[in-house]
Amino acid sequence: MTELSERQQLSYIASQAADARLNVELETEGMTLNIGPQHPATHGTLRIIARLDGEQVVWAEPSAGYMHRGYEKLTEVRTFPQVTTLINRIDWLGSFANEVPFILAAEKLMEIEAPPRAQVIRTILFELSRIANVSLFLGDLGVQMGATTPAFLAFRDREYVLNLIESATGGRFHPNFDRIGGLKDDLPKGWINETTAVVKRLIGFCDENEDLLFGNEIFQSRMRGIGVIPAHVAEEYGLSGANLRASGVDYDLRRDNPVGLAWDKADWKVWTHPDGDSWARCWIRLQETRESCKIVLQLLEQIPAGPIMTKVPRIIKVPEGEAYVSTENPLGEMGYYVVSKGDLGPFRVKIRSASFNNISITPWVLKGVYVPDIITILASLYFILGDIDR
Amino acid sequence: MGLVDKGRMPAPLTKLFNISRSYSMWVYQWGLACCAIEMGAAFASPRYDVMRLGVIPLPASPRQADFVCVSGTVTDKMAPAVKRLWEQMPEPKYAISMGSCANCGGPYWDSYSVTKGVDQIIPVDVYVPGCPPRPEALLEGIVLLQQRIKNEDMQAKWKGDEFTTLQAKRQAERGELHAGDPTGQSTHDISTDPQPIPERDRPEPIVVGGGPIE
Image (cartoon, rainbow over all chains, first blue to last red; front, top):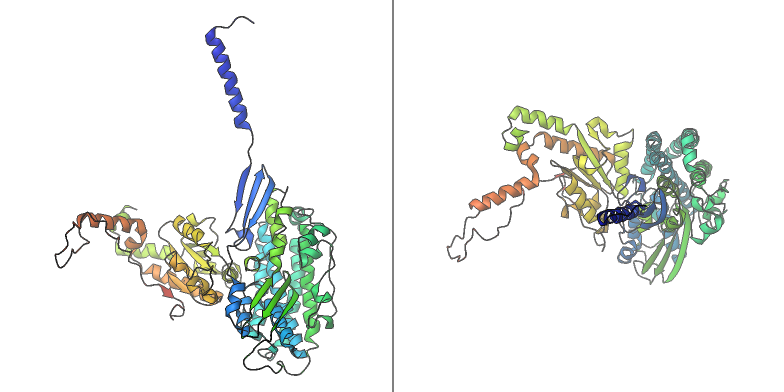
């Protein structure tokens, strides 16, 4: 190599330095993706903060609290009958199911029991609210993947269920129908025949949805093998409901702990799935809607005669004590730990809602997935923001 | 839109513009809580079908929207996001407050974490009471908003808040806004004193059903 002049040497060094700088600039960096708080795919106002490396999620965390309305504090300044008005609105898609465990806890403290007729009607309304809840989930599932037709179908058939709930309770969305010791009113005339027709229609909706959505190749390829949660992880994170059963754990509070409701009078099946992926979670919910329809159809034929309300004092004072009652709500296990000091209202109510535990697994399950799969995994976990933040 | 900027729109043209505007409204859905499902039923279900009213419920961002439908509980954590959304929308813009929570706090009137009414943050044109309101009530609110838009003076609405602020500033510079101290006892010079900018003259909000907002 011939000797370089000083000027040439300097330019050589400068070019080397420029190359070094360029290499630094080409190094890839992580990126923080912020989904929410208002995003069509988050079922409300959940915010997911995801750290990405290219298309893969390195680290993700949910940021809850955008819908925190302070239920547990508000129940301390309400009387027992007033509390049901509030807790209707926790899981707003299946409102009646929210009231039942609280009322059962209060009844447990007062040592009374609703008459058999009220219990069967409670179970029917409970399952109807589950159908209303999960049918919207099945419709929304398509929207997450860019298909709008299932949502239209779901809203079409869900209206019939809401009409049933409205004609029985007076409330389309928030019935506020359950009372300590029974129910507010008896069923209206002709309701049973109408319900039979609507529930049969809903079974048709499930079949249609299975053909249209679950049989779709795109849907399957985006769901199968994505977001797998093994059984032991699901148990450790405290998942419940269909998310737990999709991981192969055979646990359903309706069968295992039927707290004074009439599920044992019907013949139905608890579905489980061994896979634990997004597909399994959606499929379990579809099967559960069918089972709910079966339960309703069977219970409609065996509503016993009799009163719908036991004798309770006009002003309800719940005696001192503590009680915890949980039921299998549409989203999972929902329980109320009620502490009473003998007053008109509860001293303290701790609400164990299903979605809060279900969403706690997101940092684990989102690790290593691709960005489009975040949406489908969140959709299949199925949470409601009122149920998370309370 | 030179004529609009100068505020010299001929009346027939205003009429035409208002009719066009009222039947091509893009709504941004700010669904927060239970009311979001009823809003979804009104906007996306075949039974209620809002598109027959000339409302398109699917803009990708608030920058494309003509009005926003705030439905559900606005919490203190969410309030800055609602405010930012409103500021991102282009003029002329309208707001519908759906449900008791967005109107005044609703069942959470004594909660520590709930904003008692979205009208503390953004100006509301139509209140839809109910907990949650039926989809028909929301549709009536939209129809009432359309009627208002049809009879609107475009000049005032089109130019929006920024324009009004600018006008007020100019008037303040010219000294038109201050009547001065009637007693004449004031010692300091009023014209250099920062003057409060008058609030924009908004029409009274509409309440679906006609009752008080409670």
